[in-house]
Length: 325
Image (cartoon, rainbow, N blue to C red; front, side, top):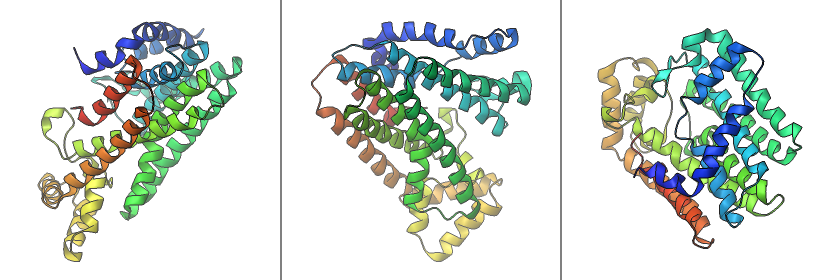
């Protein structure tokens, strides 16, 4: 059995019902929109975000979820999908999970409008049901994701990212959405409880580990389907690189920065930078930090009694750092 199926097992019924509700939450009177949303639903990914929502709710609420939990999961997925559609436009990306992106099939203007539509549907789903506490959690996440992306762009121009700034970027850019899933799962069943903040932290630790793992893929083998050196070509400063720049000689640092700034399209030079990072302990350092975040997430779960939901969340945390893609 695949790990993802194992994780999903205790919430299989909730996930099936969620998919129906999620599809219904997208419907429109415009045929073109329905055609596009149908395309989106049929090309879904692993659905880790709604899984975090349901597993958290069930863990702290004796295996029970409610309508708010379903709405919360739908809102997260609507807003997450909106950001992905917009990202593909910004990145001029023609593929998403091996399928054509919305902008590749229907052009940029339609893709941007579809993203806006999904965003508004998410907001209205919360407002129409009075879920203002859930809406606040999600809105903060969207604001932070935008800030994180912009902070990364601002810093990439100068290549002067410290480790602290790097953590702030990935906390906002990646971890904040997983944190929102977990705190929203808690808030849907136990509003105003301390668990809302506890599970926000849990999700944040998972998200930090997740992003460092993603950064490590850039130094991996071609077998994972993501070409190596992409981050270097895009002048993204990731943890292995930051560590090495902070621990090499001035001359070496100058060579690395010059390579990234002026030779990032030169495959041979990019490969030399990758090897330099590997040879100087960059990957080992990043792995150590990733495992620290993983352990912080698992420590939070230890305080809860054993259950299928706890097992699934532990599997999820481990999957984040063990995954091959």
